[in-house]
Length: 508
Image (cartoon, rainbow, N blue to C red; front, side):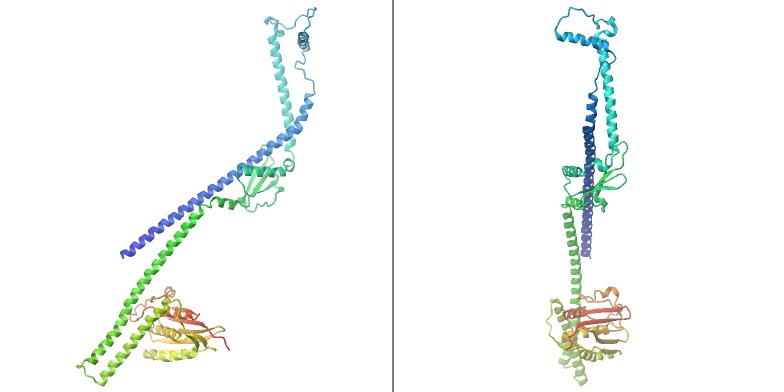
């Protein structure tokens, strides 16, 4: 009991450890898969956002180069006067400059218009400098307003264009390839462009959006004053395989754990079966010892009485002792035969002496001999031989034994007056032999194990049934060696029916 409890505790502890290990590995794999998928999605989103920004920058640069340059040239061709409206000051400064640069001295005195003293007011050098700075600020504001108006007009014209005119699709594919490669997303992909109303305007080869998990979307020209809803989609057909490759070093550990768990479970099952088999062997040895000891004791006692001179040797006494020795010898022979049957079960294949036999004739012979046992208990046996072509290739000795075993079990496991029915019939390929009784029947949970070695069905209140639990295992073995099958139909408390099917010889 303590040993069994120790095994149970060990199995329970190992089971808990294995289950916890597998649960932790599954949780780790799921976490790693989620992180890998999230990282992949984040890289794709950053890549698509970068592509969208590059498209906007390139579009703005192109328009600035193509259109803004010509407007600036036209603007620069217009004469510019810093001191417009103040010609007197301008002529005074230019005259002074020309005179100074020419290096010539004039004998004509010109009355200066710019003074260094503060009392002279606006005509001082300081005042003239402030005036020049003011004019430059005004000029800058005018040019800035001009540039703003030009840029606004150009951009407004650009925003109103259709998406197919704003994007060079071949250049877009090159841009996508370059950005994906820089992000380390070196896997196949396809691109599609959609307008604001959802109409597809471009689709690259192998694009498909059937699997939503493999498709990512990105809005285009999001900085427009009035975004029109243009967007692009990128499809990754091998996304699942790419994510699996990131986990390929983790999954084998789970597989090894599963194999280890399966090995552990198999070991536990094998140990359990071996334990049951050992227990059944022990019961078999105890039962066999008892079964062999009883006839040997009877034969020994009869022999002592025959050799004892004090026992009167009357004809009646001699006949009784002779019958006792004969019956116990037959019983001992039967027990030895059952032990020999076990040796047959231990071998992979039995050495069968096959020959052509008539099943109908064999069944008639067996039931005729067995009827004495049935009638001794007040019962009856019915024989129905309906096989039209009853010839099979079989070992007569073993075939006789299996039919006899089925009939003997039917008789042993019947509490009331026994009524047996043995039938034969055939079809195109097989001959069938059935043995039906009105015994105690077999429970449904026991029907799966009745053909196991050493297994014995519980008989309830019936305690006089002797045996080793080898009869049906022997029947199953012999039928299988004859390339046949055996089935059991039973209802507990109402009886059992065994049916044997074996291939028949082709009709000549």
